[in-house]
Image (cartoon, rainbow, N blue to C red; front, side):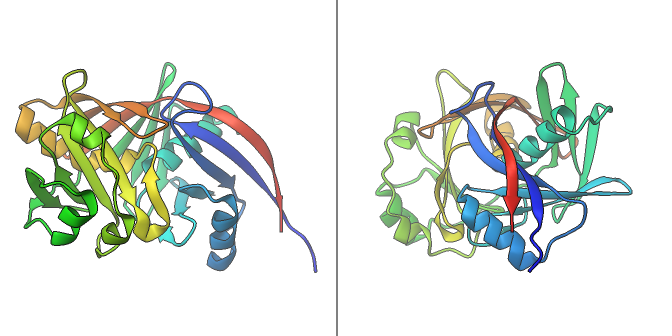
Length: 262
């Protein structure tokens, strides 16, 4: 059997330093691997997402895999991929365009920040599922549906102190559960749980803010937000709602660079 060598980077996204933010694996490819192989690599990496990208006429085409399946949108692994393209692959422009299952995504390099330019996702109010009450052991103020189920709590300490029952939170057709509340120090805080795709709690979830920014814009009467994801690793984000897009600014740091042999 002929072996293949694939470059791999592990990038901590939404943080200026390693050991914080959300780690993502990034694999630049000359051409697509079979889906089964990409899924095996993501499973072996055992990070919330592994991103793969190839060059195309528009710039790049990107795909993301959790340890268990391909996902439709991932913010932190897109930020990590852009970091690799800008800093490791010698990309000379200030804007990267990615084709993806979620449509056209852009990443803009501005000083030492990378800015994700993603489509906004509106959330619609819904009845609170009993599984949410059971799984979070708390009565939400409001519950909404978008890519994920958004659960709004009364107090930021309620968000920080959650100890979820992940078996209950797996009982949804949606990607996962985002829990959020208004904050005194920040505009809002959030935590994100995706047990259905093999991630109990995601440290920092860029795609969550494509849903949270439109929601909090209606509640707070503003379009620019300083948010914090209050996971164990934690991460801070600046996000802005603009023309049905959400701009999400963050930094990234390289943890490792190596080669996969398959």
